[in-house]
Amino acid sequence: MTTLIQDIRPITRKSDAREVALSVYDDLISLVASLEGSEWSAQTDCPGWDVSDMVGHLIGMGEACASMREMVRQQVGGRLHASEYNGNPLDAMNARQIEKHASLTPAERVSALKAVATDAVRGRMATPSLIRAVSISVASTGSTAGFPSKAKMGHLMDSVLTRDAWLHRIDIARAIGRGLELSEVDARVVADVVGEWARVHSAPFELVLGGPAGGKFVQGEGGERIEMDAVEFCRVLSGRAHGDGLLATKVWF
Image (cartoon, rainbow, N blue to C red; front, side, top):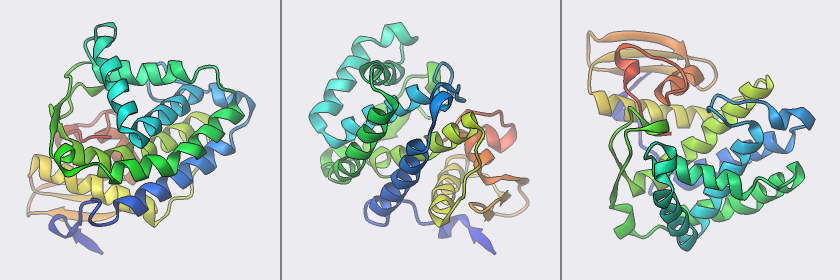
């Protein structure tokens, strides 16, 4: 079955953003709850982060999404410490999330992630329309180098933060050498990524993504043909792996 890009419905709170986000958190929590011993110290694809750090970041981001006051507090802290992270306030914010939760035991990390997940999704979906319409500037240094220079808050809340949790589940599984059973929810996330990627570069292509989360996607005629694994496609677009041609176009994760 071939999916035309114009037929991909973006993930928004008017469609299925809440349901997809909750399902992604459920899958993430199941993986994190199964971690044992040295798996917590396994290095991930995110430079300088082990699994424990990554979960600390996920807890911190969940806390920010659950409370507008906490979100503002973290953003202010990120701006104040941006100079320590090559001028990137998001990298500074993420680092401080990790620092805040550094003393938690593995069991406490699991409990904290479980406790914040539902409230994080509720907070994101309740973001006021005026805030959702705001576009924020993104640093061209550090972890966001090469990404679009602007991001709309509504898109971040509806889709990007779900992708962040989704791909960190992939990161953790790769770090500890585990396979994952992918579902329709994973395929929904991948399709949403494909749709945004296609709209950003607007060039014709034929994309064949393998695996349970994949599919065949087409935009226009006579364009570049790309065939690869669906998860690897998302890793490339997130900057975790190298991509040439149309695959050099990054989208937000």
